[in-house]
Image 1 (cartoon, rainbow, N blue to C red):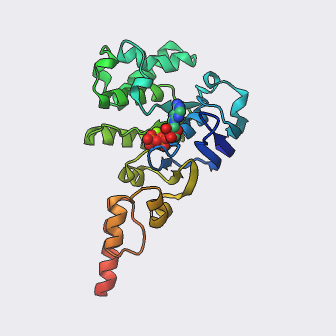
Image 2: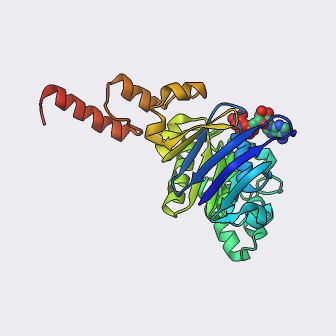
Image 3: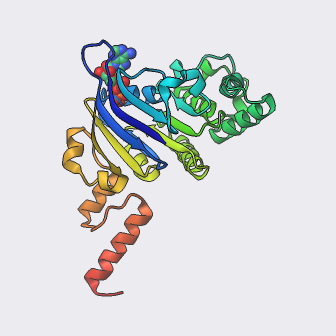
Length: 272
Ligand SMILES: Nc1ncnc2c1ncn2[C@@H]1O[C@H](COP(=O)(O)OP(=O)(O)OP(=O)(O)O)[C@@H](O)[C@H]1O
Ligand SMILES: [Mg+2]
């Protein structure tokens, strides 16, 4: 769905922030991980068309992104900013959520329905008249998510959606990502929370100093502990626990862990 070839990028024209990135992004939900300053946000801003590649090519659904402006891509690719204050600019929660769909010329009735549905999904349906700047950081982030969901784009990119979220906010975000996958959308997320990655994403791309250090299915990537260490990433707790328990396969969820542990114990005890 998205193809990136020989991508290079520099902010100052001297030091490269992204060097020779070659990635084909398919339908799998994809997490982009790596230490602070690795170039993750820069990379997704290029996908979104907010930054232009220094050199190289990005195609979305077979079309070169350079052929259309960021505004023209807005109906195809939605992005939740890392910092909500960079995204929020309207006076009420409802206006903020309506801006995106109306901006891509959605009919007002559909825009309102989408906005309300998105606000319900993030738990802000009772705050439509609130001033976004009065919300706490967690709700600001959820509002930014709702604003993007309301646009109903084919590709949805989140930059650190789990920032400041408690258990309920995390559950809401997990459910949103699961629903987007069911709807056949391409979901990409920049994230530092590896437990969240294990639970929600099928593919993981590890960035390190502006390069792709590792790329593969989530269970494969989380067994590459030496490479992950170079990118300052610890595997998810469930994977670490599985290794300590001597499980033969990588488990990414509690259910998988319980099953694998039971199988192992049965084998050890010689029972079927
Ligand atoms: N607007 C900018 N102007 C100049 N340099 C920038 C700008 N934005 C980011 N950088 C630099 O580019 C590099 C990559 O930054 P980027 O924000 O893409 O990293 P990141 O992987 O998203 O990090 P984090 O996990 O901290 O969000 C860093 O060295 C950063 O300081
Ligand atoms: Mg970032």
